[in-house]
Length: 278
Image 1 (cartoon, helix red, strand yellow):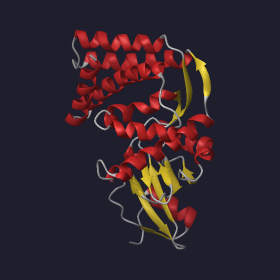
Image 2 (cartoon, rainbow, N blue to C red):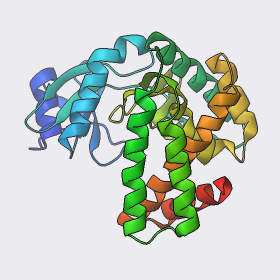
Image 3 (cartoon, helix red, strand yellow):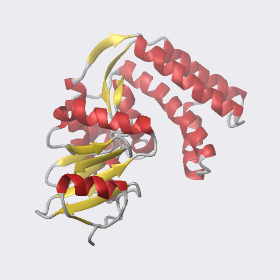
């Protein structure tokens, strides 16, 4: 399909690439479009609704993309006015389309661990208390929202506050973290690719495992083993304890966002994680 739209994503692609065609891709979210240049190269154009997420993804591509060469899209251009990015397109299939229990699913987790390990090692910072204190402060704001909305009882409130205190008093190493590291953001093809860097920032390194731990690995521990085989080492005892507290953040944010977005699946996930921590 020839692109003649006034869509800011198409305008940016046309400005940078010349004539382009839209390549329909139902796997992409609505705010992302795949385009094909005259020479056959594929690109994706992505428009952000929120300026801070646009700024974070732009910074991630420019500052840390070199640590992910061959595994991440490259920034081609941007339009700050419309919060739009043009990126090279990765090849491959989304890892969340692999059949559960298949060798392809296990291999995807192994490769995901390998690539994340490269990023963490390249950007590692020594242990300190500032990361934990900052996390505890942000976590407390989610707890307050859950209380205000009547989503948790007194016992659950105390449990979440307990984990906030653990984080606030913990020293932990940090690194550049993806913070949405799940199979839906992995592409498996000739090489392993990752995308969606709008949450990416320096954070507690162990936190990058939380979504997988509480959304995938509880029911499939062999995927956890495959991931950390690729990563280079499993979490030690102290890191496993910290991961439980990051699970508390996962529970609180899922409950609040599920309530705000009227998403019963996300709310149920938050409730499940909270029950596991009790």
